[in-house]
Image (cartoon, rainbow, N blue to C red; front, side, top):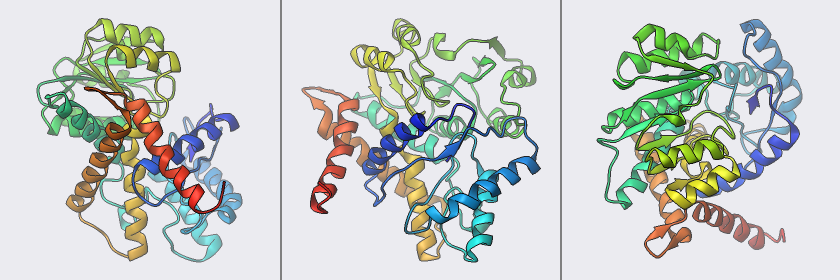
Length: 352
């Protein structure tokens, strides 16, 4: 579910279509869908957000259920919004079920769900690098955004020995050549909680450089990971990344690159699309659904281990369907790999 001013029916149709193939890639038994509203939580009070979430659920509740459709959060829908919607569903149905994922740990949520998309993306990029005889350690990364996805990616990159030097927001981007580590990573959560949707305060807090109105793709790095929103990398950005010597782009946001940008990146460096790279989030949503069905809570290590296995399998599927000689077309691999499973299921069940 997405709450953002840019939400339109056509965007939701595209995202729902894309989600079906992404879910197929995870190897978990899930279909796909997308919903939302052009209501934006930005600048709204807690009370206003709660009332909207409850009103939204008053209509949505009859269309979802633990064995029908299980929503999760997307842009503008975090733990707070999930809590309000889940609470209203519970009041309307008078039952406690795993009807949402991304819930709080104390009421049916899964450990590492907030970090899962970022963690999974870094695991996928690591597999791409390993195939090239390289690793995360010793490489510089450019990350866009500063929400849960960017935060999770930065945490895992740091843990594996890489160095992240950018974050970004609608107001511009921050360049921190020292690396975004330790308390700086924790500060991202404070920044997100402030509800201001700007990154300039980070630069003031830690003495980093803030570049207003620009995107981080002009910075010279080894690996770029767009983590913010759709179409954030256009053709001009793609050309800049290639010219600056970037050799790998892992698209973490949904449709983060425009079609022209994706084509240019695919020709000049190693590029993987969002439906494969960011599938870790929905994978852990699937694991949360499993835990809810079993009335169990797995440990952080158990969930992380299962996530690593899923990202390994997704990468293997992309290689299987996208390999051509020594090279791998990750776009083709992800699209064909996701499509084949859906097509086989439709044929087997007499849908076509």
